[in-house]
Length: 261
Image 1 (tube, helix red, strand yellow):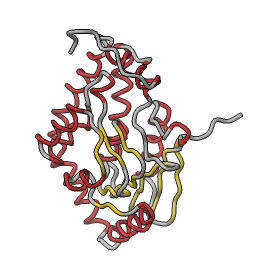
Image 2 (cartoon, rainbow, N blue to C red; image 1 turned 30 degrees about the vertical axis):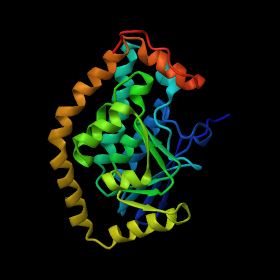
Image 3 (spheres, one colour; image 1 turned 90 degrees about the horizontal axis):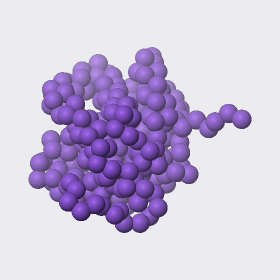
Image 4 (tube, rainbow, N blue to C red; image 1 turned 45 degrees about the vertical axis):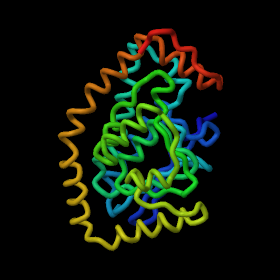
């Protein structure tokens, strides 16, 4: 029996849609999904006639973030490859030659929120919940979490990443984390409106503008991401991620050892 694809791609003229396809796990991003998504994006980057890419999640949730079961099994030896793989996917979105629109509903958590931040336009249903819960499961927020500071300011970034709290779409919109919010019933329509606005622009100028954004942010991320990967790897020496991920999976409070941190 063939395995279900974790990534679906549809093409409609100048528009392509990439769907995270693991709805039974709230589209939790495991390594296989990350690899399939990166491969699909590489194929689309070379496709002729494409102007806009939409990224969405199957079902009622964009994504619950990185797969906590897989993360709980990581060791110091394997943690670097896991997080570098996720960073490589988000970088491929940032480097995609055409605008990428993220269509969000339900929950957008952790690594999925970083994937969303890698997109150019971010549209969300107004009942969507967001969060960076990594510190609550024993790891720091790393890689493209660095985008929080330039997107919403250092103070807001500290609030969201140090507490790991959940926040709603209205706060996300106020902070600039998403640019457009709408009632859930209008999410498809609002996303299409954003796509049509992009398609009305000059193709060459649009690609050039995206390339400029990438250059403006590139030096910052090149300095920020490598030490964050080091920090993620180092966290697995403490035993905290293993306890935190197990607690999340078992739906219980983590039993942190006294004095750690």
